[in-house]
Amino acid sequence: MVEKRHWFFDTLPHVILCMGVFIVAFPVWLAFVGSTWDAATIANGQMPIYPGPHAAENYYRTLFVGAGRTTGQPVWLMMTNSFVMAITIAVGKIAISIISAYAVVYFRFPFRMAAFWLIFITLMLPVEVRIYPTYEIVAQLNMLDTYSGLAIPLIASATATLLFRQFFMTIPDELVEASKIDGAGPFKFFKDTVLPLSITTIAALFVIQFIYGWNQYLWPLLITTKPTMQTIVIGIKTMLVTQDALTEWQLAMTTAVLAMVPPVLVVLVMQKLFVRGLVETEK
Amino acid sequence: MEKRSVFGNRLLPYLLLAPQLAITIVFFYWPASQAVWMSFRIQDAFGIATEFVWFENYTELFKSRAYYEAMWTTVVFSSWVTVLSMGTALLLAVMADKQIRGATAYRTLLIWPYAVAPAIAGVLWLFMFQPSLGMVGRSLRAMGIDWNPLLDGNHAMILVILAATWKQISYNFLFFLAGLQSIPKSLIEAAAIDGARPARRFWTIVFPLLSPTTFFLLVVNVVYVFFDTFGIIDAITKGGPATSTQTLVYKVFSDGRLGGDLGGSAAQSVILMAIVIGLTAIQFRYVERKVTY
Image (cartoon, rainbow over all chains, first blue to last red; front, top):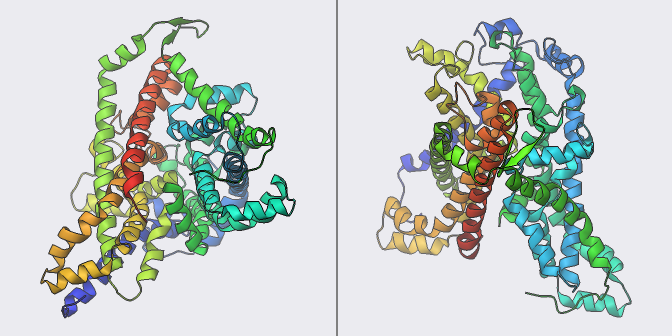
């Protein structure tokens, strides 16, 4: 800063940050290495720190054949389920939240604030505190083992509604007045003005909600019983339940790597949007 | 704050709100009220009839040793994860905030574990610390430590704490870095000119100005440990060995499913609901006003 620094204090931050990066990356590196060796090498505890020659075989078997001793579902099917679930949740949340925020901000009607609070309070009711009753309802609606059952109960979103409401508040009133003078109704104003202005907010939310949807665990665990409806995050657990010695670790690690790739790619490729979405949804 | 200029349609706003409200009522309010209702009832042995028993489920709960154990486990687990992940993240953020070369590259390399699912994080750490074949697990045994998280409750606890901490560092790092970057550099320079050394500058200027961020993260981390670590625990230990890593949320899950004690499980849900409401209230009451990004 102001004083002349000793060389030691110039290198110290790099040393500490490199250690941090190492801690963060090491478990993932080991998983990747694990996905490139054969079962025997891993089971004997002989796995080295560098990748081995069995990558193609492991990835092919995991993706298209499935782990032999367990349910035997090919992982591409699980990944498809995860994709459908994550995208339905992300798109669904954004769609229903943007229209409800639009209603609350741009209209005056009885029970407006009541509706707003009703949505807001759901923040305090995560799945974890209403596990079994929610399961019962989904069962009664015949939504177990369906994509709609996986996604719809999770698409109500207080945070997204709050975020859109806050954003709409910053849109100048003059724009509404101008559109009204031009004879635009609420639909036209939404389509031509609000939606184009919201693109960045929508994109940032999409990144966060995609990760949220992809990483869901408790909910799919509860409502999927058929192996064909499993998501990848659930599927990996079924590979570990057998007696420890029988766990096919090379396939489990391949699955772990495959489960990490889509959300991590989303974060790395859309880093700006991700950071923005994270900071804004938590505000 | 209200809009001055609005549209005058009567029916439309209700139609726009309908999907959100329908989902909220069917999948949030109805089950939550069911949980409250169930918590006052017990089911007979055949699961056919239920009987209204007032607070019996709650008194049973507060008489049971297992519940206090789960509570203690949750306290230990959340304290360690919060302190470790926030401490590490703060250290890394302070280092990344210094004007050094490659600061953005470090940020990129540190934030991506946010995207790893908790259950997957659990699997990765299990693989590393597996006593017979995991790389770290074997090294520990080679060093003469009788490491076995599958049998030793304390070892299992250490493992879930490490996995949960690892997963949360990137989130805390991001917010600490944002907080640090919003502190005006002129303040720190002024202190430096007055002769304050770096450590003193940190504790008297940076740390107090960072306290809104710290407090916000404290609440968020507690909520994270309470609820989002379910996947980590289920993947690594399933609450075991015995019940040594069974948190409150995990107990709701396992009592309702395996034990079939739906009334007791519902009573636990209601208590958790009260905890979340309390935490959220604290978050909004104290955090919203003070935190500025």
